Image (cartoon, rainbow, N blue to C red; front, side, top):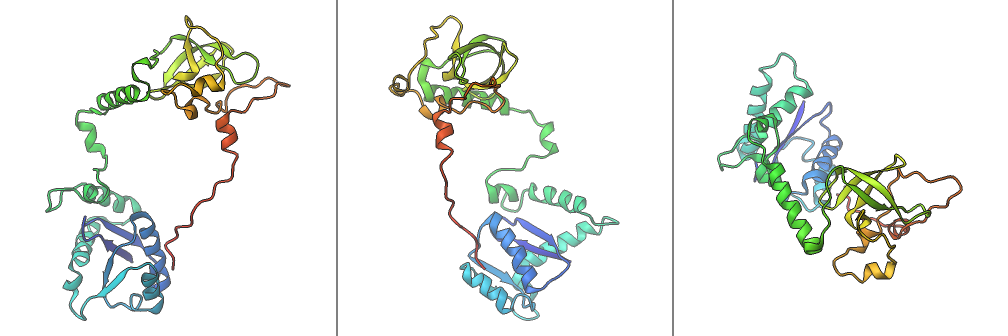
Length: 277
């Protein structure tokens, strides 16, 4: 048996295989769906025993969901869900054996197909289309768009004074092991608009922000905390990022914790936002 829920706005379907149709099992399925898609204002169902049980009514009441039941012997009251039941059965009858693979294949096709509104179900629900294998046939402009976005982030973050490095370039990077403030390294990869992966002469692979890197021709004097924070174009949280976990620390040499490392040791409380019921 399959439990089917359809969003009336986007026509987005949710189908859950169930071995039991009790009110408890139904509540558990809806709780999982609500945790991903949010609480609806109104839920329309037929007059099945699981939908008119006190447990089911109490679950909806506790979460502020209005429950509307269809008229007896008039399934067209909930015609949206009933129509999808027909579409789902028609699609599954084409297979000798219905498995999760066939169901998921049907879902991805159904959710990227434009509806009568002219938009796909995914676009109406989550604001974007889902990426599928069909997208591989289209020209990929994401790299060019990401490059433009990275340039905008660079200009907003540090203006025209941002350092730009290239792969294979020799640089000096900050060393937080307490021995020397700067060591020689080579850039091996770009991890973002302001972050690079470097390989030191010792063989270690580190991740460093542009504010933790210098060209070999620049002055390698070590900046103090006060000097760094006085710069308006510098984000202190990015400068004092914790050293990467794969940095090698020599035996007997105590590591110097950074400000970001010290701040992450504080206890953080998370608010309980359960759906209730």
